[in-house]
Image (cartoon, rainbow, N blue to C red; front, side, top):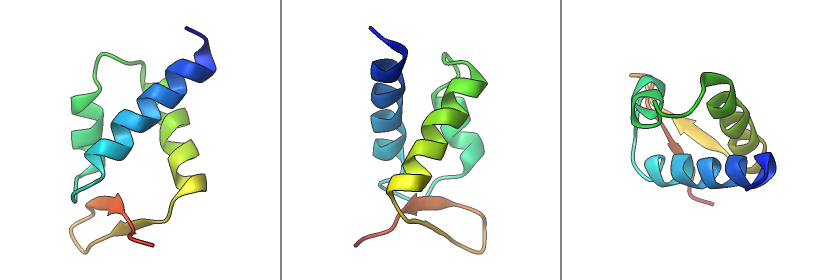
Length: 65
């Protein structure tokens, strides 16, 4: 598995978590088996491809388009 494939798979996991409002810390907790830097790369990729909504509590989710 290449790094790009691994990042794509991780991004898909994050997108699944973002189907409902979730705190970033909960994303990190759910993916704790992955290095922090890899999670941040996947998070950045998601933010460039999708609009993320954020509520007054700081929870994120995928914006419906």
